[in-house]
Length: 194
Image 1 (cartoon, rainbow, N blue to C red):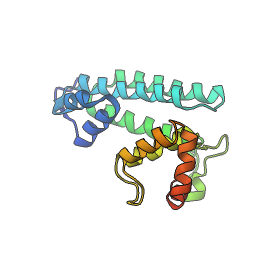
Image 2: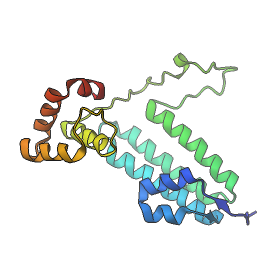
Image 3: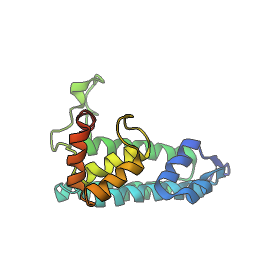
């Protein structure tokens, strides 16, 4: 049975969609939405997860990466078949929870155990693979600029405009030279960041 009520987008969700798809989309998210509109927004979000996995996961076995893509495709099918807000939200919660555990190493499968204590050792999930984040020199430079742009580096680090000047003029648009400059001039901040 189709639900006639409208769903009001929570402000956090509006900002989330704005971060993903831009200011125009954020403005469109304001207010209330039909079930169909809300469903389409959730499907768009899951498709973005699929794109992110395809573009961002660089080192993984094909079976694992394809398994993640299949999860997204299955989630989209479930969302398309949902006809009320409760179903939509439960599908999102269940599938995103599974995805997070899968990305961390593997989805626990303990349905046949009477009780599992919610503690650290029970959630060490690296039995098939381990997650490891790496940063290239360019990514580290970009991270510094991102923090400077948001004005969250310590006061002793120059503001974004000055950092850009240093990058262009002193370092010749070279991320490696800039990172070396940053290490020499702000070693404590560099250690805290990396």
